[in-house]
Length: 337
Image (cartoon, rainbow, N blue to C red; front, top):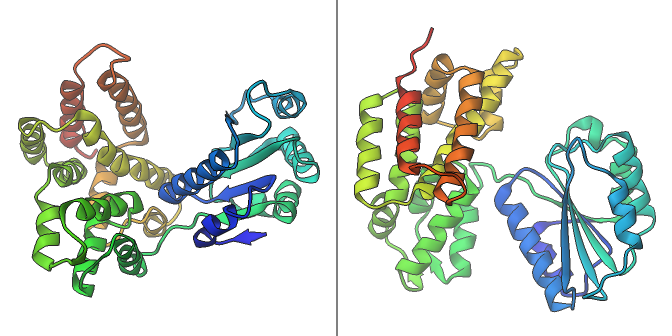
């Protein structure tokens, strides 16, 4: 059964089904869908939740063994199976077909998939899941529909604003629903219910350090070492947390790497930017960065951010802010060959 995201909560109130499939690359939708399913599970007495992530070394017999095991703590269990690349392989395909044909005892299963390629959509394993599971598409919101999406989110917290202000908000978040949702939540904390003025929204969005963190990503893309250094210093002076700065950097570097890889494969760069939700003035910034930075440099930068995240959380020794500064300044100084 195909189920729209907006219908999920009402459906869950009627009781969890044995099998759910979440399909799509929209991270906010995925998180909200998982949260809704987990909350319904807890409400309905599912006191045990387990998560499995499928990688190259994954043993698909774990699922069969899980079904045969007996829970010591709960009569009902929730099992989440995350397949990040959307390619379970031959053995995994058979295991998913078996899961579709015979549900696990006393267990609701959630299978998490990215946006699938045509081959995967036409596969026997996905066809079997479609016939038996509740399938929820986690589609991205187009730029044209983003103002209405923001308006709906504002209305849930009793707020509304003009179409011009909605368009301004949509432009500021560059199509990123996580960022859009954060802005909506922030407006709910800063202002009472009712109409939001254009001036109030602009002040809330522009005069915060998190927006400066987005500016940091823009300065790095542009190769502006001087501006990069000024923004880094300003963020540190304001006491900004290093982890909060890393998220906007990830939103800049991850799509840039995908676009660079598409360019090297000979694909159309403009199409790749559209798929990565890069629009408007930001496209010129990305083109400049593509001319300067290599795949190897971008991959190394993302790995470095992962290490900095561990440093910021105390898992690794070091100064997270110093490492962020070195990384950003280094990327900004790279010149095209």
